Image 1: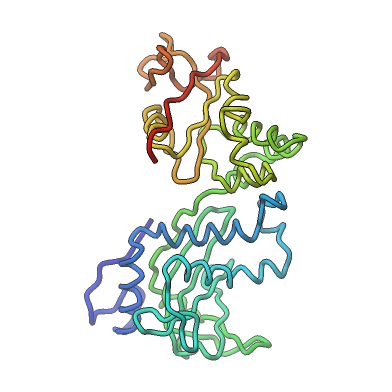
Image 2: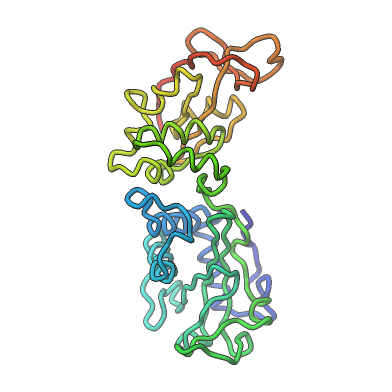
Length: 320
């Protein structure tokens, strides 16, 4: 992720034509509490997952939301950012950050934020995120008259002009958002997953088809559509046990699992994530491929021409 956290007080921030002490103070505060954007990205991801409510609805696409839910997205992002960072309430606008009034706005189109009359002349924290692209951005801009278009909508709200968009000081620009794997695997795989007649079978099919890619708990919940969705991943009656005969293992967020995944060259599962893959006993044709020692054997990532064989038991989960 890109973070502009180094600047000199009394010199303009990137994108600013002149110094603005309030903008600099808000920028410095936000950059200081979230240097790599992890916390802001988590709040945005949480918002999408709350709106979709996949565990109870099976929805995973923005297009599946009702119009009122889409409209509510900006409010939820505002709320979740406040919960994440414990921003004080503003007197007029959404937040008070370093004693400065800040309005929070979200748009599906980058920079197309709707600015109410009370925010004119004030600082705007603008958020953009796209779940399908798995990207997001956040920037600050002063909603001054010189940065706004003259026209208004029926609520007297205005948008940033071309100069206003150029004046945005980006905290994070086009940064990665935790991926919703159901939006990036082929449609035929998604159809095969949801054709299954039970939550357990759908979860099994998910880990069978979306191998070597991080899969979030929210996706597991969406596929399972059950209150006890985490039970569908475990070894005792869950996907780990069901897929073992196919050579497939499922790494979780635990320390030993992460180390094992990284040893094999896989993406490390992050908090609340899983990564599945098929393994094969190491043979001559695997050459210098990285391997793990489990159950007294050496295991590598299976190639397409490797025979299917029961997978080993994964190491104890150890510590988070």
